[in-house]
Length: 472
Image (cartoon, rainbow, N blue to C red; front, side):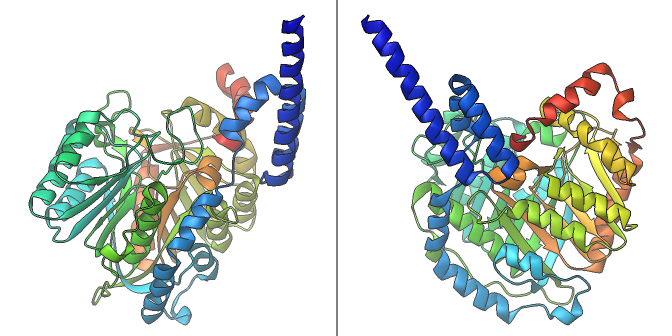
């Protein structure tokens, strides 16, 4: 009889927990559909739903908001500094107001915005800048591997330390779960500042999928910054036969906009370590002379009060008058972005989306097919890249805005990941990005097959995979 009492108590406790989780889901879910889905799932199948809710249902991140308040002093100073270099609104063809609202500071003038394409060019530029560092290097990558490029990168950091350069090194606990202790120990022995994976807040293993820091950031002396799609791994150098040539894009930033990227890094470091580094960094970066461009860094994450990732893409698509071209390895957007894309196409805007033909993560690759028919019906063009694997996260609006960064066109990037996008409000840069994407589309096939005519695995699998869209 004792086991019956224990079982009854366990069942009652499970239902109580399911009820409490349902109340929390109803209060905190981003959308009514999400709230209804979690409540029904939790109350109808609590044994399965409760552990899934613990992994996937947590969307709020109040602790990071507290961290941001710790950086408010520098943020206010940065706003004042940015005001000194603010771009005159009348000189920009695009309305930068929504992007400034998302970023928290104004578009600043006098920046370098240099496109870097593919592994060797990107790696060479980053390592060259590290080799030239005089004061400090800030590093964060979602993935760092102990392979050929990983060893080269580590050597550059160790050489910097040997010259007396301070180095801060972060990785994501999920993305870099396979990075060896020996790699980290070599950095620690050289005096590199690191985050201890065993004590960091947030996800500690690959099964805790939410709240990934998906940013890829390198900052040298507060004056040169890099962000974009590439991580540190041999596959990004095109050395994985499963993917072949790896198509990626990074941007090399100079000028005052680097300070914006640096503030995001300092916030991330403080969140993970509670170790303030703001006063150890350089916060005065002179504008680039002559050819400086207006630019802005928008950093988003689950600590935002609104869904800033989705709002960034929505704002860019809504701003388009003649074209909006986007490249992403994944396409599982929310309904707001889908509606914006369809509306743009219906307004006569040239809407093109560049995606890989090859899958590296099958579920989001499959789910994307469930969106294509509706988009193609109103004139959106879907290009499938054939010359390897395309991993860049890039968009261009008319001849007014170009963006390079880490944010994919999916719900995970919009809502769950920490992401960075560097925007340039400049016709010359927009044309450079458009030309780059045009070359990529020349190596692609225009999708012309409806879902009903796709192979059976795609035809039936895509609608099922789309059910997982909130976490893909």
